[in-house]
Image (cartoon, rainbow, N blue to C red; front, side, top):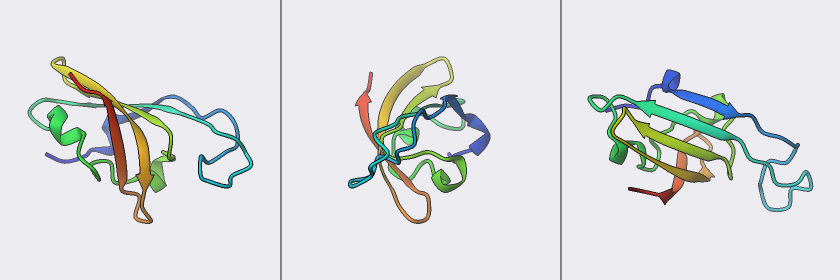
Length: 98
């Protein structure tokens, strides 16, 4: 199972100028993203693992954004982007898990 950039969509773009980092004076902002995978390719457990999304530097995902993970028509959850490393690997804090 592997992350596919084409399955990630920005549903609501970021409003504001902040980058959600400590000391940022641009304010807190948020964008809403959705990742939909087919059960045969990406089950929900795989999508929820750290570093599953590996291209935050290219997509524009920022700390504090929300990602909805959808497994085909079977299951869904959402999490907050907690950290992004220099390589663009995302760590999410899962908030809702069925």
